[in-house]
Image (cartoon, rainbow over all chains, first blue to last red; front, side, top):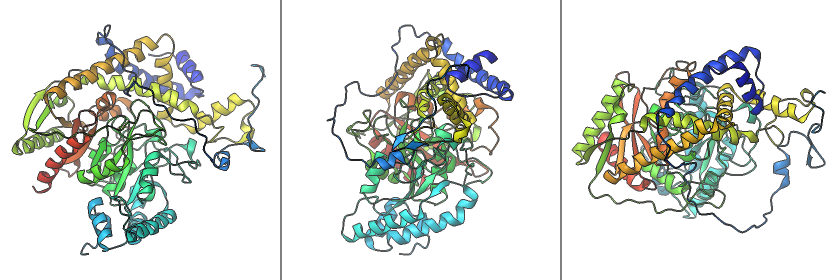
Length: 97
Length: 477
């Protein structure tokens, strides 16, 4: 089964907090899925190419034309703003404070 | 007009009625809004009902009809899955994270429908971020199956399917990443089409897994599915994966492939019986039934549950609570990282967190080759399976889901048993094919059973004709 430490590390990479009481449930559910997807290990795919997406390979181009948009639409969704700018909390800090 | 209940009409019937002047779009829309008011208390299909704008759109449609500017969807009231953006309308994706988010632009499909004078009744419930097979993962409430209120409507487009089945809209749009249109259509006894990857623009669809997501219609019958598909298809500069392709229909002698792997262990006996009876109907219609093999079928679900969460973990990284979707108070955060952590922890439900973490895990160094890369290679094999099959047959026929609509709460504790509900549908997304679910029978207890027809890429036209052949025969039985 996947370890508690691994779960905590994945949560950190995912920007998610996990409560102590949730750990066991997550470990269980996670493990049952990982156990199931192990099935793929049966397949020999050494000579097979990868399919990451199905879209046609050619690039799609369009002119870089500016369009009039009402900035209010976007600004209205911001959680905090000041003078029509997005306002955020402290970005630079020491890890220990 | 004889029909007393306008809400029972199909698109084709309603459109004819509007054109004839039997009723107006305002009357039609009013009938649906009344129906929603009366029925949605027990079904819970809608998250948001936009009565006022719907009535304005209906008035506009009546003007268009008066001026003889009539498209097949002019004045027809529809419902939209709540992960497709309508400008100015709340769009939650079934998540607490977006509980108060108002869409700032229209999805391309909405833009197209709006130009034709469509009427949007509201936004329908879904599993959070389209992750689920029962609508129970909605952060707000579960939707009930109109055919049996103790059971789930399927998912993730469960609200859309329930709204169509309960006559609370003429048709609905949904999205399908691993079966999210077809499985709820099957559970609710209606038609649901997942188009070929690239056939319909996804601009304005809240992304779950971008190499799999497609928007498609949920309708009362196959004819309606075609009408909606024709209205929303086509290339869009805002979605580089969308293309204008000639939708083919070259049907001489109908050959239907039946994969032996689809009738293996785990298939409900009543579902199996209904599918076999459907095969007999096609035989009666003169089709040649060809037994085929899709040996990679057993790996499709494993492949899907690596690829979809991997893409989801990247797609959902954008939800940080800064530009939209705030879930915490200012004083709860001191540093920017607290905002990310608290908004995401607070805003996402359990299933979404699990899939984000699963994707993060399989993409992380040390596991990438063993999981993600392996799944991409397995995906190639799955695609090749279908390519080989379509050399011999026109369409592939099988069940949509291995089980009947299950009870609310029945599968919510065991993730694998829930995931197995998608075992027949995910491979179609992995291979990018079109697939349709149409009703083909009922269980002894009266629950709907759906048949799955799978087509070659961009052969929707053919797929729909073949589905329609069955539907006509089945309806007359």
